[in-house]
Image (cartoon, rainbow, N blue to C red; front, top):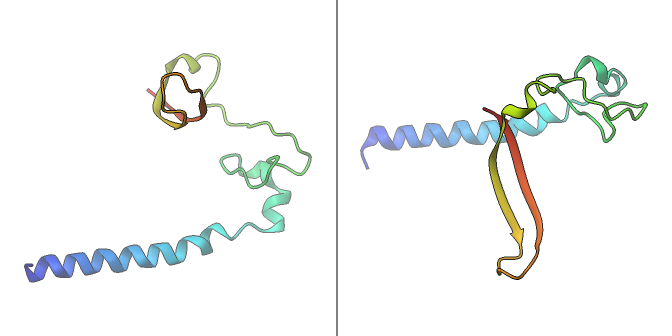
Length: 98
């Protein structure tokens, strides 16, 4: 292997390792104050019902009555039933804006 390639690979592996080590620390900073003020972070769903009053309503408005027709299936993964006469257990799908 060329020395430059080995160095680049080591740098990439080290960077990836550091990012994996730091990710839980970044994700773990959910505090009681953030939970109490969940409406100030509509892009984050910090607890089961989104807010302490269990409203479960998303204030995000990028998808609405006008834009919903532009949604397209991004990917779908069949889980379970692979035979033609067998029912699927579950389908995991994600939609994205076109």
